[in-house]
Length: 153
Image (cartoon, rainbow, N blue to C red; front, side, top):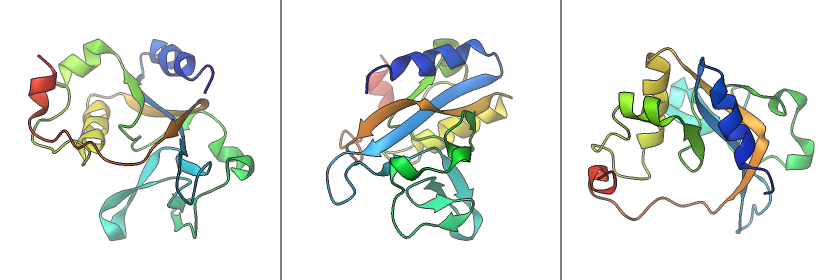
């Protein structure tokens, strides 16, 4: 959407913030226009990350994705998250290089974004979410597969 990039870049001026994710709206399908992700949180009993606004809110499962017009006030402000999806996030080239980029042991589209968020946090930086950046996400995983290092050369 217009202006989506600026907040992702500006927030990286804060040295405590290592990675910034955004509001992602579902494009297409039965949930078109609904929240696809407002960041993610760890769900211990499922041993998995779940998308806030699509799957969970305050640790409770949602019956369906949230309508962006009815997102609770606490999700309409910048804030720290445990994880943001690899669909769209910003990170400085310096930090990306320090953590050696995406781990090539993960098939693209499965867990490499979770792992990079964990690496950012292990380095003492925050994983941040901003609702001021909004994109449309056509849900689906990369079909490129293979070794990610081939794409970093």
